[in-house]
Image 1 (cartoon, rainbow, N blue to C red):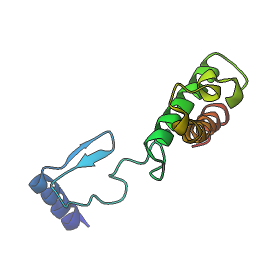
Image 2 (cartoon, helix red, strand yellow):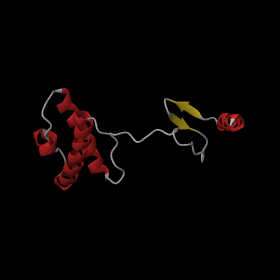
Image 3 (cartoon, rainbow, N blue to C red):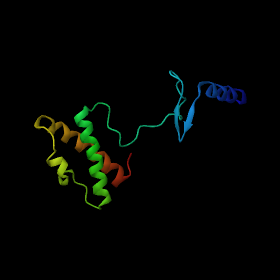
Image 4 (cartoon, rainbow, N blue to C red):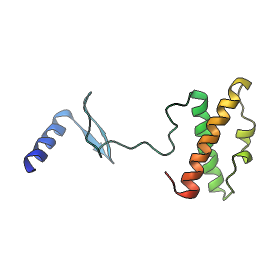
Length: 115
């Protein structure tokens, strides 16, 4: 066990691994062991969303944060930016879908403590 730890430490030093607060980065192609890579943040938009939906998702998270911070009852329909997005008509429905999804993720996290 001691020997493998020593080898790991040497390998880490050899590739210039920087570990700060659980985040690791190293040489190209280096794969850090489990537990050394930062987890996906709860407020990050899902990869399958397009740009307009990601924008809506982010705004939905922020809307939930505002409602939570102002001690409001969570209701996506009370958010002006959800009801009347300042976007071209062709993008509004995609934005609203992303917004609603982000708002729900924010409510689940902030109001209910879910990740």
